[in-house]
Structure formats: structure tokens, C-alpha cells
Length: 259
Image 1 (cartoon, rainbow, N blue to C red):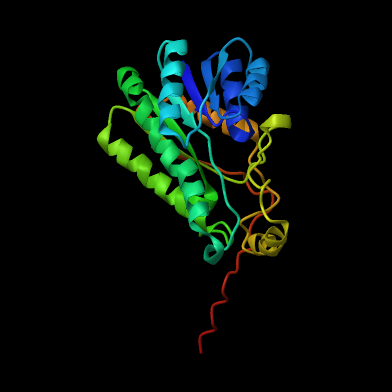
Image 2 (tube, helix red, strand yellow):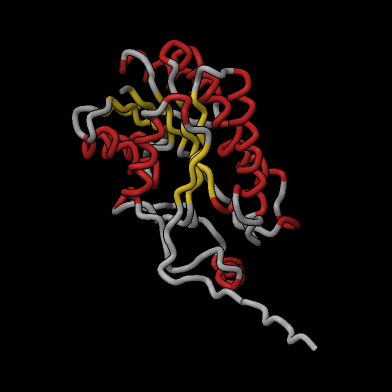
């Protein structure tokens, strides 16, 4: 199996790319930060190679996918793990914020997929896109409105590619709250958030049960992605969320007494 993992220099993408290589796949790890990619390759072992790629630059994407295909001898699967979230109220989200989020979460995914289509058509391969509970299942989280909108757009992008290329698998992998792995594989998602706004919205997230004590274990996510990329066009969508350690309280209304 020859897999391209995009967004592999940190967080979930790094953890997935390293694990797939350690499980015997040939893996090209793509991201902007070459120094971090080299560290990931060293941890992954002989089955991994590093390829520089900026998903917001279509020329960079095309060159990176071509290099990955040439190095691996083809492409059987792609994992798009790149994703960012700007923490701002919608009224404060300016054009630069919207472009930043969409360029990475949606347009980058479109460019990577387009560049990989010729190779995936040949192998009847699969693309797995990491999505989010916050964007695809729950209502948008306060402060992460632009992120939720971008993930909804990603969902439609996946559906559109599925219609145009039915022999290729396009799978949405919806992930619950997950902090990633250890070291460089821990998520950097909230690193640039404004602490004051984060402090204001966190209580709302907990109150609405968007965030609780149950987090997706990175090994469980890796197992699911491994299954998806090995399943061809069989899987349209999967959800990876933690089982609750405590049941939700259920209110059972009392039946009124008959007169």
C-alpha cells in the first residue's frame, strides 16, 4: 500500500503517517515544515519519505504529489489531515481569516485531490479526509463558526468528487475530540487562539456538552484510518468518537394520573 499523508509534520497527520509506515505501508509525508517532516520520517522508519508541500499553493501541491508518486511508484491512498481553526466570533472574522481557513481546510483539499486523481484512477484508490464533530455533527461551536462552515464545505467537496469519480473512494472520517499523540504528534489546533476569548467560550462548550472528559485515543483513530485506506470505495463516511464514561441523564416524563 502506497499512501500520501498530507499535514504530516504535526498532530493527527503526523501520528497517522508514522503509524501507517510502521505497519508496513510505503508512506509519503507531506507538509510545509521540512525539518519536522524529517523528524517524523526518522521516527517512522524506512517506509517513509518526506516531501515539502504547501496546500495553499496549487503549484506546490502538484509538484509534491508528483514527487510522492514518483518516489512511491504510484499512489493507492491519500489521507488529508491538514486543518486549522480560527477562534473568533463571526462578527470579528475578517476576510483574511475566512481565506486562511478555507484555503487550508477546503481549497487545499480540493487541490490535493485533483493532483492525485490520475494516480488514484489507475489504482482505484481512496482518499480519507479528516473532518470534525464540531463541523459535521453538532451545531457550530461558539467562536469556531468559520471552522464549522469550512468543514461543511469540505463535506460537499467530498460528495462532489464522489459523483464525478465513482471508481475512487472518497471517505469522510469525522473525528471527535482528540489531542493526538505524544511530542510532535500532539495537536497544535488551539495554539494560536486568543486566551481571553478561549476562556469565554470554554464554559459554553462544556455546558452544551461539546467537550467532556472522554477523548478519542489516537490509536483508535489510526486503526480506523488504516481500515479506510484499505477499503477502496466501500466506505463513504465513518465517525470516530469516544464512548462516554458516564451516561447522559435522561428525563422520563411522568404520566398524568387518569381521573
